[in-house]
Amino acid sequence: MLTDRQIERYSRQIILQPVGGRGQERLLGTAVVVVGDHVAGDTALVYLAAAGVGRLVRVARKPPAAGRSAPDARIETWSGAPNAEALRNVASTCALVVCVGTVAELEPAYEACFAAERALLWGHSEGPLAWVARVGLPHPGNEGAHACPACIGKAIEGIRSADTTLAPAATAWTGAVLATEALKVLLGMPDSPGSNCLAYDAACGTVAAMALNPAGSCAGGSVAPVPVRSPGR
Image 1 (spheres, rainbow, N blue to C red):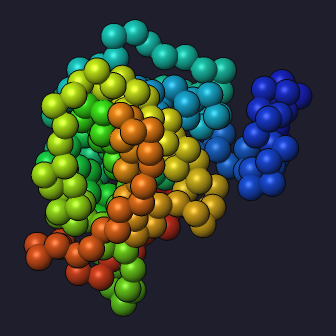
Image 2 (tube, rainbow, N blue to C red):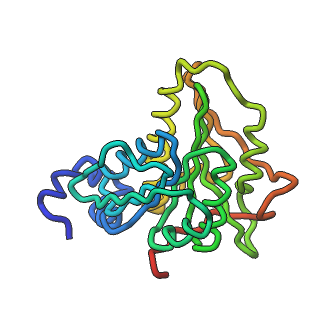
């Protein structure tokens, strides 16, 4: 049951049909892992805490410079090299993993989420460019989105910009969109990126959907987004 203070605190969300009181209770009772040293990970963490996600685990080589606090969120920090085995143990206690970093940094999170059967979101920004995708995990018998690290790497290969002046804008976009897409996944909303990667160009102010076609080294072949599972299921 939501308390009177929680109803007041999250009133702007609760009045939204996809959220409502039950959705807010679900957020308060769930947990999310945010992996990666990229600043966008800290931005996503702040938004998720403000939205009322009850438990947040920040996994990075270096802990945040300052502690974060939110009225209803328990924020934990885990520092060290995020290898697949360690991430699997953390992911198994949460409903969703958000990975922020390069495609190479995505690979251990992908392995961990496959082993723990957890949903996975990925985001990264370089200069004025940024990308966010819901990563598909191998799911026998299902045909779905090709969105393993190899597929994502193929989609963004060679897309670079030397301009760094708009890097803060791209970083902020990445964190905000990752948090928004994470909330959609947690609430069971159907309009997550799916088989597409959202691409942002801060220099042009444009957002486009990039199709994630299977790469030759696709880790899953036919893959589909893994449904959100509660810890222990």
